[in-house]
Figure 1: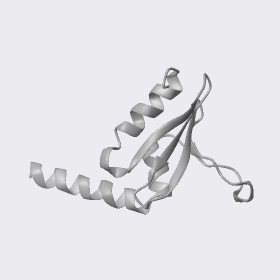
Figure 2: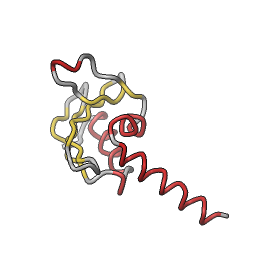
Figure 3: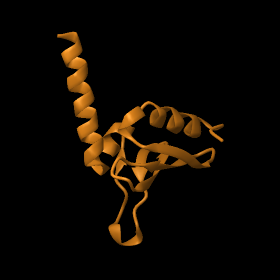
Length: 99
């Protein structure tokens, strides 16, 4: 399904997250955007959209305008406290191994 640039890029970015998310599935891929349903460590799912502007989580009608993030990591740091914790733990473990 990831045949467009946006589909390939979103798939690659999410695959690199490894154990920091529970999983993902591309649900809509077009020539101008791609959308993936991502299961966060907290157990709920969000729809992440990648366009030429960047990454965003679609907001409900009463939540206002979606914030756009330059990286998938920034988006997850903003939406998932467990993601932030897991990434910090992985960084500390990597630093321990090299010291």
